Image (cartoon, rainbow, N blue to C red; front, side, top):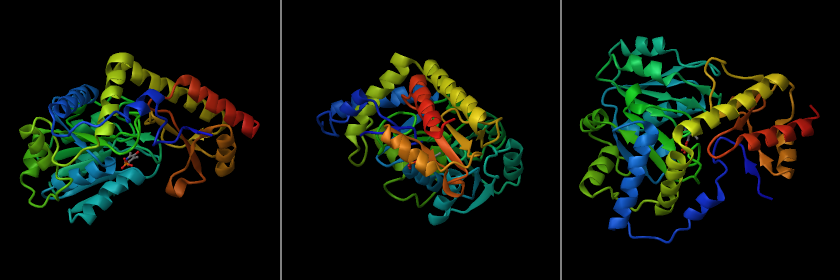
Length: 357
Ligand SMILES: *Cc1c(COP(=O)(O)O)cnc(C)c1O
C-alpha cells in the first residue's frame, strides 16, 4: 500500500505532477529547451519575489548549498546554525577548504539578529549563511530581520537555505537582501527529489569572480555565465523530466492556486497541527518562531514513535521521528506542498485513534 507522506521531504506528489515526469524527451540544446528553462526562471522569480537570475542544478538542494558557500566566500564565512541543517553549511565550508566559523544556537531556539550583527561587526566575514526553516527543530528564523542586519555590511554576501520553506511561505528575496536563496524540488514545491534551484544576485556574481577555485559542476558563476550566453541552456545535461514537472507545478502554484492562497493554506495547516500538538503533547521549539511547513512535537507522553508510525503505515500514512539527538524526544509532522487541511485532519484523527487519545 502506498503511504501518504507527512515527512519533511520527499513529500507526497500529486498524480498529475508525477505524470509530467514521463513527458517524452527533447534535446537539451533545442529552442524548446531554452523556452522551457526561461519560463521556469520567470516563474521562480515570482515565487521568490526577485529580479535576480535563477540557476537550476541537477542535484538535491545540498548541491547548491555547497556551491554557494564555496563560490561566494573569499575571506571567511559566518555560519549561523539552529540545528542539523545549519551545521551542514559549516561542514560543507570546511570540507571545501573555505574558512568558516560556526555560531551554534541551542536546538529549538531561533537566531537572534543582534548576534549576527555582533559577528559581522568584527569585520572578519564576507559571507553569512543561514537556514530559514530548520527542519530538525521546526524553527523558522526571522529572515527579514536578519536581512536588515546584513544590509549594514555591504561586503557580506547573504546565502539562505530555504529548502523546506520556499513555496510554502512567503520569502521576499530582494526585500530581505538575499544573494543566494536555495531550495529543492522535493519539499514545499511538491515534486520528486533530484532538482535544486537558487536565486543569484549581481553581488554574488561579483564575489564569485574574486574566488579562484570554485570547483567545476557546482561553480555557480560558470552556470550563470553559460545560461546568459546560451539562452538559458545549461553546460551539462539537466534533468529535463524534473523541468517538465516543475514548469507544470509552477503554473499550478502561481496561476491556479495563487501564491497568497498557497501560503495561507500552509499557515492554516500549521495552526491545526500546532493546536493539536498543544492539546495532546507540546510544541518543541520556541513558539515565537514556528515553522509554517512542519511542526516538531515534543513527545511529552513518551509514546513509541516507531510503533505509531508502523500502525499509521498499515493505514496508509507516514510521519517522521525526531532528527538526530531528538529522535525519540520529538516527532515531526510536515504540512507542506499540496497537502490539504483535510489530509492533515485525517492524519490527526488516525493518530488519536491509534493512541487512544
Ligand atoms: C531537506 C533539507 C536540506 C537538504 O536538502 P536535499 O535536497 O536533501 O539536499 C537542507 N536544508 C533543509 C532545511 C532541509 O529541510
